[in-house]
Amino acid sequence: MTYFLTSSPFGVGSPYLNPANHFIELLREALASPCAAVFVCADPDRHAFTDHIALDMKNALNAAGFFFSSFDILDGRNMWDANSLVKNAGLLVLAGGHVPTQNAFFQQCGLKAAMRGFDGVVIGISAGSMNCAETVYAQPEEPGEAVSPTYRRFLPGLGITKTMLLPHYQMVKDDMLDGMRLFEDITYADSFGRVFHAIPDGSYLLGREGRETIFGPCFRISGGEMRQVSREDEAYTVQNN
Image 1 (cartoon, rainbow, N blue to C red):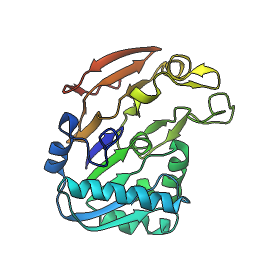
Image 2: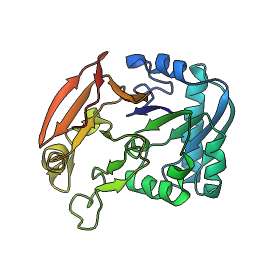
Image 3: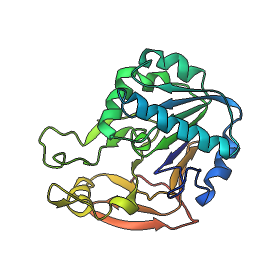
Image 4: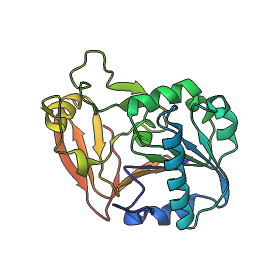
């Protein structure tokens, strides 16, 4: 399996794939074309929204020169077909959205088991990238989540990687949630004994042949501290200890 775990695969304000940090170039090396593709939703009940963003992704891939023998959607309408859809696919696209909602759907449809032995390419988008981790850090996002005693910040994921990614860093780095700073007051405190990697749009993690590399800017958060480990057009070999 080769996996591209992105913050966003699209250019800023663009319907096309972002070529920054060799993304399209490396995807072209990894992905056979044509192949069967499956777009996996973030929310199994938002059918119209899922159809719309799946089409956007298909069009962006087509525009970059990638073509498909089929481009199916996996959501609440056909969740019991997860195993057969995944087994026949060469590409899985894991949508962005609300991390816990998507995580619950992945468990409900048995996606982890369906992906056992999968030898194709995975493209993760935002929440989809986060849910690829063995242990997922569901960084609080919606009002009330940071202070809720029942909100689970750590969830079992797909186990594709041990790396816990935090996407859209350029957008959310100064956010306030429930009266606290999202990073300094919430995420830094959760990083003791753990490692998070915050990436902006245009950066992504590439995993292949047992090696993980983050292309583009990346910020490593651990022990309550952050440091920048790579910049634009640089590559960083992931270290999770």
